[in-house]
Image 1: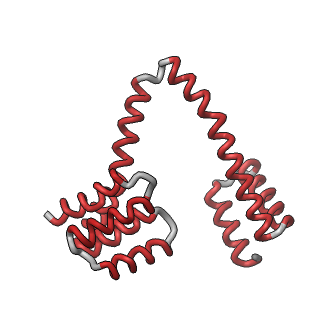
Image 2 (image 1 turned 90 degrees about the vertical axis):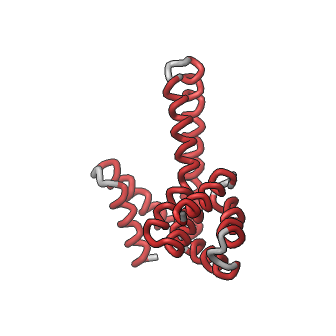
Image 3 (image 1 turned 90 degrees about the horizontal axis):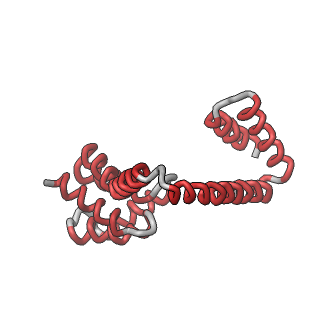
Length: 175
């Protein structure tokens, strides 16, 4: 029964928390503190602070921690699954509909319209990263990292994960 309660405690906020993890935090707090009484407000605020200090989505981190606190490793797995299940189900349904109508002229036209928008959004994001890097570490460091990264990825065909790791090591030592 506890596993079902953990599932519901994180699945319901996942459905109703439109806007992502931060929007679902009050709903999770209501389930965890008020409805099931697994934590008090102080403990929940400490879990929230811990979750905010770590990288990644806040809702899944909190679900994993609270699920583990309540029911061990199976509770953590159920909590994380329940948090991502609403999005997962919606994606499966929408992709099923898209796949069903993939040959429709309207769907083909829609994908043609989406591609340039995605390209522009990626370009804006890259420009924002570049300008923040320029402001943070200076022009020459930014140019060096950009050129070396491009050469390693495009010319040497090195996997991007290694380039990112190398840039992190470079930044740790020289910046």
